[in-house]
Image: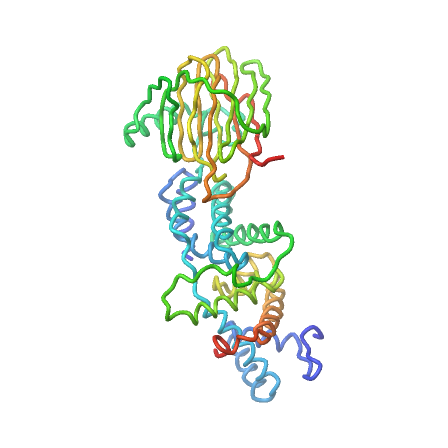
Length: 186
Length: 268
């Protein structure tokens, strides 16, 4: 997250520079896609949401206030768009095996696949608010302060939600009968 | 903090939870870390909590990132419209009016598309212009009558001094068909924004003998004409993208935006 470089690229975008736009997309499509995927639990929805996020980012690039960090602004749009998608579904259900996206890594990484599936399943059982802070903390690697800026919540609330979310995930994973085989150790 | 208590374990206050969180997430300063170390030394319950939460945290941190699909970056870049600095007189810009109102840009774009991409100019007889993707294309279109087909999804009535007529949107299978019947005393343009809807430009088939100029680029189709604009434009739904935002249409006469409207691609 390079604040100065981002600011320069954003200024270039405001002047219609498509190379700058391409660099920003290249830099942020992966974290946006991963955050969306972990909130939505579905690769197709994550890809669609990522596209919508960037369309909105560049549609409103002229309104972007450089006193805020660009990545925080992008993440805020990404989180809001992902949560809108969650709301559209109306009824959120945990992932079953058929919903988990196919594992694309080598066979020896099957433990990682099981880990991913179980963690994703536990994530999907959390409320959207809890899921969001967990994703921003552990998937996006944001600090408390960054999460606070992105979600526009007090740091105290971020900490509280993180604690509760982790406790809930712990209970979910402990209740998972197959949990002890693949990812009980840490 | 009752919400964090457990019936067979002692209650734990918010300050201790903050220290626990901060320790796990590496966000304690030196004095906080010292305080937390003291707590850990004196409380078995805090040690247990720390172990449990560290385990969950570690598990979450081990979740690998997923690779975005290969098409994603180019799909995004194709759809993004960047602002264009417009030094012209103030006026209503609409969805993408600044882009279209800049005559020099439109002309430059048309030339660049024609020269760089060597797509060229299509002089059509009885065959429709066909372009499966929405890459740049500049062309001239002439007569090719087609009959109306498909379920009517929406209608736009354009009633202005400079331009008037009707636009209908129909759907059949995976095709969305725009029938335009517009009349103008002078130069007019119609611009259709279908970017990000999971649609690609299929073809355009004029029903009158006028030689209109069309430009297809990055999810936009513009048709410029003198006099009548009577033609059918077809957009094909792709399976790749499933956005269902309405089509956005803008109508220009004598280089001024005179009307704008949206047509939903969803069935009623």
